[in-house]
Length: 195
Image: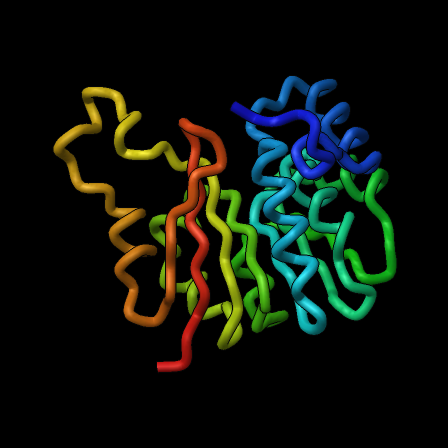
């Protein structure tokens, strides 16, 4: 059970509240959770130079967690294929180091390599996973959320291969781990190694 007496378990930056309200206004249910957001803010706070990429802006909840701790020397790019979402989020989150792009994430690969990637779109976790790995700089990290721990799989998933986990947790060019964010949700963290 989550201990709500710790600030680390309850704090939400104001910019995150603004984006959560925006998502709520548009009935968008796929924003990252506060548990993912808090992890994001801790991880990106360690990036001191280079670029951070978010694939799947949504209504900016993940973006706002990233912006809440990003170093002034780091560039942040977030891409989504919805022009409406990008326009709305770029009105809420502004700054000289922030760029919101509408399009396919492959269009901005040439802006890499990236030191950190938050992959919040299913296609980059699966079909375009190898391309995502190649976009990371050596030592760069990727965070993938929205996993269900195997012990909580519904019956129809049991006994079937999990190709996403197999790719990310067995890739020879990554050091990876799956971490629990809540008793029923998990994420994969992977760091690119020089092989």
